[in-house]
Length: 234
Image 1 (cartoon, rainbow, N blue to C red):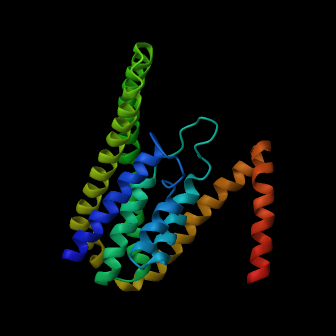
Image 2: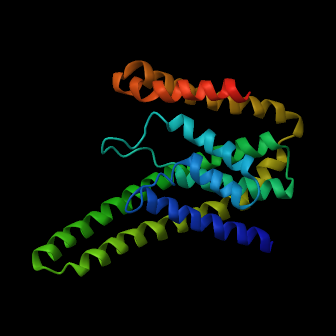
């Protein structure tokens, strides 16, 4: 039990960091599922689980990247919750791998939707801090800028930490019943669902590639590099 509490505490902190990176500070792309989920898995010695959830959550939303001043899909909190719960469930050996992955993925999608609404709420709340910063500049109170910036980051961190913790706790109470109810014989069928999710992601990327001339140039070189490395090492 103490191990589960420790995992939830660390994952909740990672959710807070992802929320901060998404809006008020850093923006190092830590909040991208492929990064935050891989990091989560690596911390607990289950990198493969983290990378799996990172890919599953990244591809379907890859067409909606935060580029050109546009807000992308805020799915990082749902992704880190799904990865954290899966790590706990794998250690408890609740069921076979694919069943755990798909059930947590579906639950994480719901948390991602709720998280997107909360992130937008915090973003709007932080706009009032921008107005206060403008007034502080007019008064020459430049030290207030740092205070207001840290306040905005704190808003996002607390929101991300709280929502991640709530998602982990609620999932821990509800999902084991569902996971144990599903017969292990369905594990292969649930494994096919992973390929369906990946197919949606690849379809989204292909659509973006074919319909956007600017995107073609952005993806062409990395694609050739990726194919070349794949041929070289495999």
